[in-house]
Image (cartoon, rainbow, N blue to C red; front, side, top):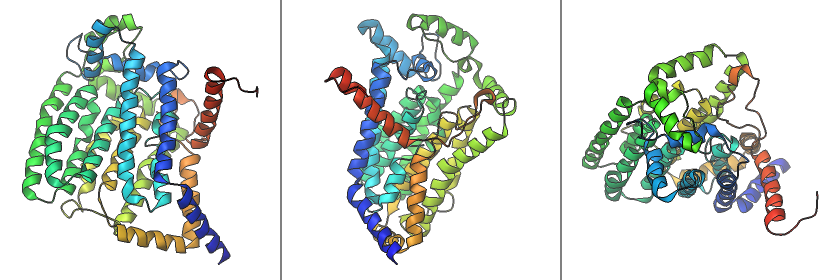
Length: 426
């Protein structure tokens, strides 16, 4: 009984000190510092993701070329620093995602441990800082659209939503398709969110018609997928920036399939399989089970139109696993799963009942505290999901948030010491 009282007091203490706004602010600080380091220093610089941002249309129409073409045209007139140009765009999108996440999480403010679980999950907002190679990845544009869609669902009524879908979201998705073709694989999740949200049959019919416009950009990116000649031309054009585009761009689908086979069956090891399986389990399956239980408890409610078939809309997203860096793929799928479930109707009365039931049960309290502690501190998702490069041994079970907090403290010390006033030597 004393343990139960202690557990309840501990949960209440967490509620008092852990506010949604405080957690969001902490994430904002961490991402801002990492953005500063990536943009204005070379400490964490990685050619892997940065070079791909330069892909443009100077060698002909090609997938992923829109953002690079925008930079190319602006640079001709304004001589822009590419790291600052691309870096500030990505930083701004990160800020928007944090803002959208804050609004999406508001429905669950009374469930403190759940909010901590969401905000500090290694595959969501913090995925950007757990692997220094991925800050400049174009995946962030694909994630932005689902964050924005979730925000629209929670903030607007059906009539306003349909107008914004037509005039804002569909055009944004079209633009993102030309920045990163992965957006095509996740259109079905956007359709799923629309079907679940709209109750009016007429509104739903019109909305689905708007999605049909996306067939045009989808066809274009697969027609102009890229070839060896364009790859060579782009590399010659981009020499002025000391940039070389990844060879996979020139091989199209054949290189993609060849790389998939070689990566998984030539370099494959038992340890790689374990890491990959656990990454999928922790990033996708565990959250899915949690949300399924929230549905079972009546805390979140599915629209009857999709109640038994919603999982089918996620099938096209699995195509992204043809790419080799599975951490990115897992993060993309996990982000869409989280946003979809969190945009469902929340029964706040049943949520409070569930929280009360958990708080009264000592075993559940302790289990949830240990689980959340493990989940946010003792593992992390990297670019390859622990799938070792050419047989090198690795593991996903590494210090995650602890390590970043230590880095944060060191950064503050060095920043103050170098730019504000001299601190005592350590």
